Length: 173
Image (tube, rainbow, N blue to C red; front, side, top):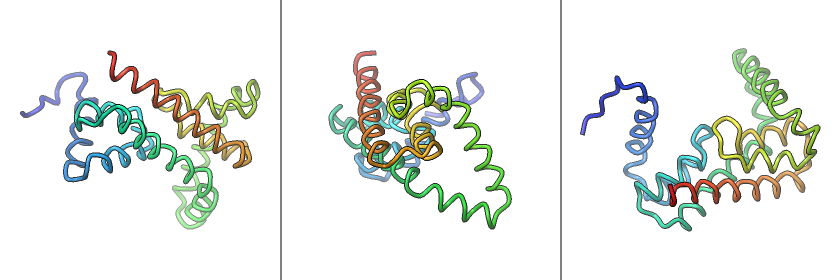
């Protein structure tokens, strides 16, 4: 079937088809994990695709999606500083990008951090809304220097909650 990409909702269908086609040759579980790794899609896309397209059970979809999203969060919290410094030093556009990214995250998460403290990391990670979810929680943990012993469990539990919300919506709506 050829999609008509002139419709107003084409970006959704284009992204949907692009993701499905790109991961077509991958095992279903690995595709689910990798889709969850992508900052734009996270588990908001991987769970519905795993259940509706790949035919995985809700439990398996949730497990691989939470693992993929949490893995990318751990990478952000642990490696963002050395990677951002290295890239900013040698490639000028990355200096501007990271300055924008860190300032953007400070603006989006700053009031939540002031109001809820470290629990804001959990709230951000548990929110399955584009551009305000797990990756924002991980960025906030990095930017506001939340210790790993506190940030990683908050990110994990928040990701599980977000995954349960997305799974419930996928199954019942």
